[in-house]
Amino acid sequence: MTSSTTRDRGAERRSRLAAAIALVACPFAHRGTAQVPAHPPAAAPAASSPASAKELLDAVGAAMADANAVAFEAKFTTRIDTIEIPQREKVLLERPDHARLELAGAGQDQLLVYDGTTAWHYLKYKRAYLKLKQLGTAKLEQYGVGPAATLFFSKGAGALAPYVADAAVTTEKLGDDECRVVEWRVGPEASRVWIAGNRLRRFRTAHSVGTQSIEQTVDYGDFDLAPKVAEGAFTFVPPERASPLEPDSEEGLLEVGAAAPDFAVTTLDGKTMKRRDFGEGALLVTFWFYGCATCREELPRVEKLHVEFAPRGVRMIAVNFRDPRETVATYFAKEKFTLAPVLQEQDAVSEAFGVKVYPTTYLLDREGRVAWRAVGFDEASLRAALERVAAAK
Figure 1 (cartoon, rainbow, N blue to C red):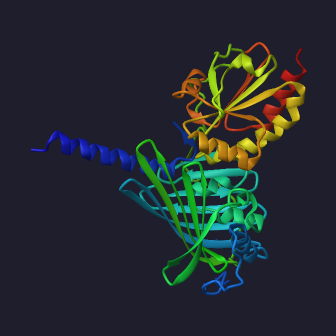
Figure 2 (figure 1 turned 120 degrees about the vertical axis):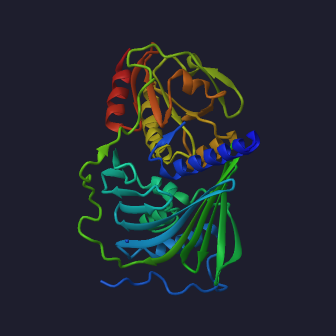
Figure 3 (figure 1 turned 90 degrees about the vertical axis):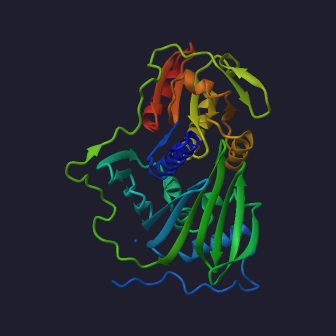
């Protein structure tokens, strides 16, 4: 007879397995003529090799700088506590901002296609697809590309530069390669990249959510700097009988015209503030968390709008969802954002605004009514709404 303890442990393992699969499968954030090797076989760095973290990443980007496209395969492994989800991926990147990622394994086969304006995400196992506006290529990182896309498209460290400015650099053997290992942190989340010569060998991130430890590892194969790019590689046509997915549910959100709830948030220096403390003008409230790649694509655009509309009386705050204070502080400092990051107590503000999907943004008018709201980011629509509330007296 099976004991209740055994059943409980089995249920817990199944729960963690489901969480791990969801982590690598979820397309948005809720509660590659003959192939030629990209680089010669890696050798131990010579004494004159770059020593700083940024120089090491710049060298990887520079090695790909003359290539119009790059292709590689990799093993992508997600581990939640003792549950391990192995997947394989094929990646093709093309300048200026095209990408194709085929992800297979764990019964969660997927295809991501970025055509420069639209980001397509096809969940093969569901025969369903998602169509979103392409805001950048940052989201590829969470699907196993790691820093490769940033280094390729930027031809160097690019957006990683502020994060690795004070990163530790060590040496470690990985297989037959003597690697330089760059490690940096955003709060308690640690990222490490192994570099052999001027090519990526491995990338790993590790953090905790509650009592669970989550680790994702990308083991890169050879990089091809002259891949044959098939016609239509960056075009997605939904397969027959495939169904469109709603990008994000708006169920439960406050309606436009509704009175916004009062709320209390905490600044990074510990000061409690209520809605009225942000002034009498319009207030933009965006909900985000660091592990949400779409949020990190959206926030720099919100920051630009903040710089433009703050002189016209519009205030903007970024309400964080469950990140440690040090994560929020580090991220905002590295990005040099001027909009206000704030924390919430036990998800109270998210719940008051009906937020279940991130990012979600509200714009409140001078009277505290919802003037505009959206899940995801629609800059044209938001800008029009900002113009209206900024002009209102």
